[in-house]
Length: 217
Image (cartoon, rainbow, N blue to C red):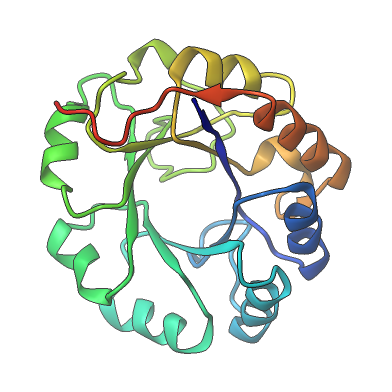
């Protein structure tokens, strides 16, 4: 049995990053996608947020169909340990930045998760998120957790509509490597509720997972 990892995404304020780290979050997510209400246009602020959580909390940069130049420019100013790609990025694009990466998959009705796990074999993990036409992520909606594969051969991160009220059930059913939560711990987009963060971490960390990173397809 392994501990479940928790990422709090869409951080836009230093105090929210500190609260997430203090509550036991394993990672925080910074969004670099202009249409998102959680977009961090101020890279100086993004850098301060990244540095605020200390050395043992992973800082993740989220991009959606960005250019390589945009990703590189962000990395030059913000200390990102992990990249998260939520668009149509090819494996070759994701691999070029000398950082481990997550590839997000939106759970369309006909999506072949096993095929995509094979395609993105170089990814550190696969993030499964709800599908909503025209929206690359952060929908606040859940999908049918029964669709999460139990032997994907890759670390699976569950996202989409998670909150303090349902995260324990989600973990019990899907046995993921980790969970990624944004809107479920907010008062407003990008404004985190610290009590919700604490409750979510308590619920998530009370669970354990049998997720096997060495399982095969």
